[in-house]
Image (cartoon, rainbow, N blue to C red; front, side, top):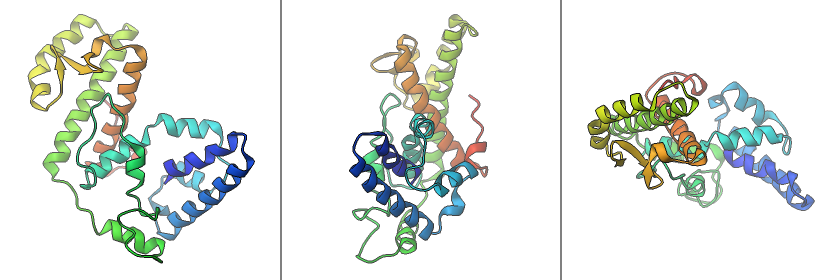
Length: 237
């Protein structure tokens, strides 16, 4: 919901006053839906504070932070854990946020809005009772893959910062190549393959792209496997 609201909060920074006014109406509508569905208690404190702001009051740094958090990637993982998404894209490819949003019941074309006149709580209940948790083995395997991609991103950052020797990392990659291959991770030699080349040869922008995807996905997998709040998930690599 926060991701969906963010796209409308950003409209006012354009030059179309009429569009900003229409966006405010959409913001009010989806915010009221969220509250009406009884979901407000699911938010952590910073999210609740954002929700409480009137329409068109989110500042640019907030919108930028939400964009950089790659929330759609985390949503895709959570949806995969509920059997709503068949498979995640490769770690050098972003998920299609529009496809994810179309599943959510606050949109009239959601598959969970089955008849006209459903109230928010009924729509949310229709979704909540129609999903089932994926097998624990699938979630564990997904978490292992995400964890390895996150480790690879962090390890590359350490090498490029000069705090980890490239030769040492290459040795670790050789030792772990069989495990990575067994999990279905595409390799280029012993290294992870992204954008059609070994990870070590990624440009800074390509490295960042994979890093943020891996971080968002591993957080979601670890949250599903734990009983801690979203902002308390351990992100060690």
